[in-house]
Length: 53
Image 1: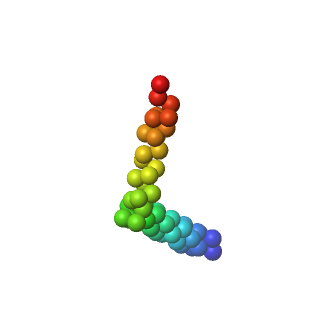
Image 2: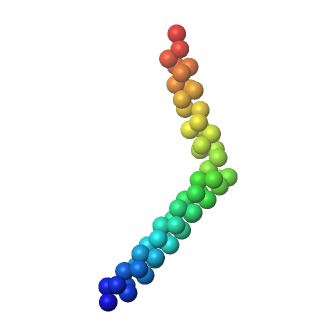
Image 3: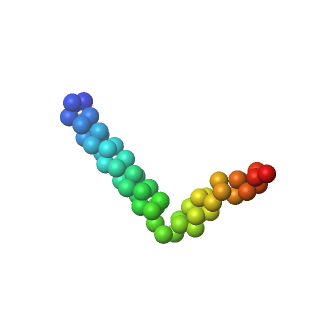
């Protein structure tokens, strides 16, 4: 019984993880997130201006 069920469960888990990865990747690269990423990209540069002599 276990030899028949285990590959099916493994396949289902693999498919779910692949779907989660693809959805996460689509969310990251969607245009709605660009403003947040632009702000985050400027954080290191703003920190340098405060520490400059």
